Amino acid sequence: MSANENTLNHKIDFAIIIAVNNANPNGDPLNGNRPRTDFAGNGEITDVCLKRKIRDRLQEAGETIFVQSDEKKTDGMTSLKNRAYDEDVGLGKNAFEANKKENIEAKRDETAQKACEKWFDVRAFGQVFAFKADTKNADGVSIPIRGPVSIQSAFSLQPVDITSTQITKSVSGEGDGTKKGSDTMGMKHRVDKGIYVTYGAITPQLAERTGFSDADADKIKEILPKLFEGDASSARPEGSMQVKKVIWWEHSSKSGQHSSAKVHRSLKELLDDNGEFDEDALKSVLEGLEPEIIEGF
Image (cartoon, rainbow, N blue to C red):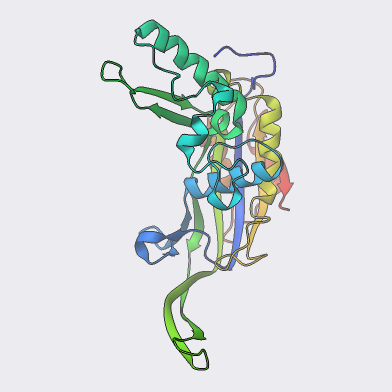
């Protein structure tokens, strides 16, 4: 896809500092839904989990999202496959019936462009659309779209303490309902306290391919401080997850004045165990690149 005048033309780096108090920020289903930790005992929130929060907040802000969670679906589609077969954007079941390679290549580019135009998360994070061949003589088609927005897993600055509690329910048993039974449900886990930090970047070279714009970057910037608003659950009670600060570096060129590694390291070296840092020092540590420091919502 070709770039337009609104396509993002400068590199962006960002970081998010997250406070967790008596919550399970990201449970591991393969480990009894215990909060994720690395081998050193530091808490972890995966990049997939963080992208889910970003998608949810964008959807609540009125953006059209392809990878919608089941409880937040707005279009009635029962699966990603059905949503991908949206005839309005040319992703219908018969979109790739042509067997000639040149026709398929042209259709692939057209489909990728329409998908990026329709769905914010596709042009931001990318997506792979796979179409199975409908006939014996036709090959299946895969359309990989690489998005410009990347985000790392968040890790706590110190090892976290995890409290596990056995939970039960008391409900009416079989019969006339006059007898009560106590049924063991399992375990509930929480991180007592932790400060997590994640880092990300937005690459203009990839933005050109998906049509990701300056306005799109501003929307990402707007929702990051309120990443956990409206996300309360039994595992994450209201107020137990909070974005403390978002640090946003906007470079003056596509390649940037400094590498992402150097930019992210400038914050890492100033952070204390409580997620605090000298803001004036951060603003002056990188020549020609002063970050915007945004308070959490």
